[in-house]
Length: 357
Image 1: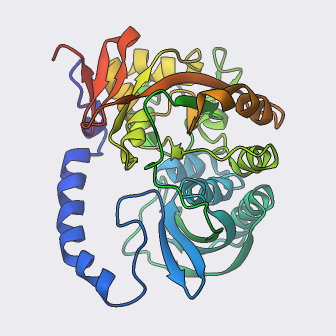
Image 2 (image 1 turned 135 degrees about the vertical axis):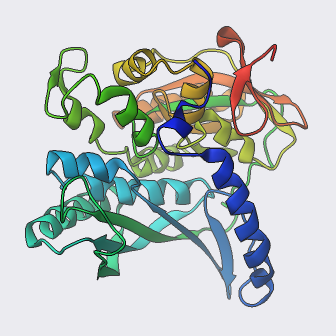
C-alpha cells in the first residue's frame, strides 16, 4: 500500500509542515523582542537565559489519544501522557524538569472526568518529580466534538526546567563512531493514534480482549507514555553525560536528525517490534517505511554516548527497570540521514523511504 495511510486517517503531515513553516516565518522575528533563544526554534524544547540561569520551556498535548479515552470512558491515564510528552522533551535539551501548567478544554464540564484527569496528572507529576503550579480550563462546546455528545476534550501542558551550567544539549558534540542507545517505549505512547484507530477499530471493538496483546484494545492504546526522568537521573548518578537525547514521537527515529552536528545514524539492530505495532502494520496494510515514520516501534527515547560509556549507560538504565540496547552509531553525513539497512530504509527529510527509491 502507498505511504499515505496517515493522511487517509486524517493527518496530513505535509500540509502541517507547510503550515508550520508559514507560522514560523511570522513569529521568528519575536526572538528579538524579549529573552533571546539559546537554541533556535526546532529543538525538542527551547532555552532562554534569565540572569545567570538557563530556563528550558516546552509545550505539548495528548492528541487523539483522548478519543480512545472518550471511547473507553477512562480518563485516569491521559494526564500521565501529558506530563510525559512535556518532560521528555525537556530532557532532550539537558534540562531538569521543575514544574508544569495544564490547559483542559471540554465540550461540557463533568466533575468525574476532571477528577480522573487530575489523578493522571498527579501520577505523572510524581513520576517526573515536578509540581503542577496552575493551569486553565475552558468550556468550548462550539469548538469541540467528542466520541459521543458532550465528551469532547483537549488536554495540553507547558513545562519548565532548569539547565545546569555545562549541561545544555544540542547534539553538536556528537562525533562519528559515537553509539546510539535506544530505551524501550511502553507502547504506542501519544502519537499516531489516528492511524492506529483507522487500522484497528474496523477489526476490533475498543473493549474487546485481544489475545496477541494480552489485554483489551482500549487498555493497550491507553497505556501511558513512559516518563524517562528516572532513567536520566540514573545516568547522572553514574557520571554519564549523553552527547544528545532524542524523544522518539511523531517522525519516529527521524527525530535523530534534530542534532546540530553534521552526522547521520546507521541503525545496526533494533529490538523485536511490539505486538501492537505489528497489528497496526498488518491490519492497516501500512508499509514499513510509514510505520517507522509515524510510530516509535518500541523505542521511546534515544541517547548518544561515547563508545567507552555504552556498557555503563545501558546497565544504569536497566537498573531502573527500563530495557535499553545499543542500536547503532553516528556516521559522518552532512545530510543527517538515518539508515536502517536491514529493512532497506533511509530517512533524509520527513519520511523513511526505500533505500533505492
